[in-house]
Length: 89
Image (cartoon, rainbow, N blue to C red):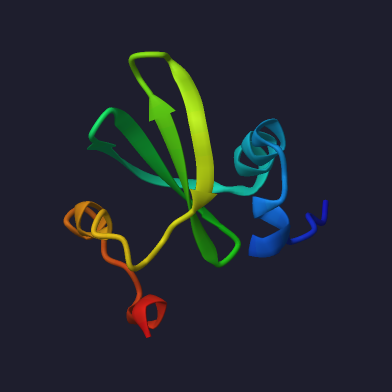
């Protein structure tokens, strides 16, 4: 069955529950990190990365957003996985 690729702009316009659904059906889990009060799960969706912010104290997903490559949090990911050089160019 053919799955329509969803653009980053379209993805960020979805509701939280729609984002969860798309990630569950089309995304690939990469790694998770602990960051302040969150467990952040990183997914690859098509050709972009998505972060899922899970507040473990409240046991709920608070935010799902595109990974910001300029955020210092990227170091926590690069310590665990190797990103393509193209990602940063």
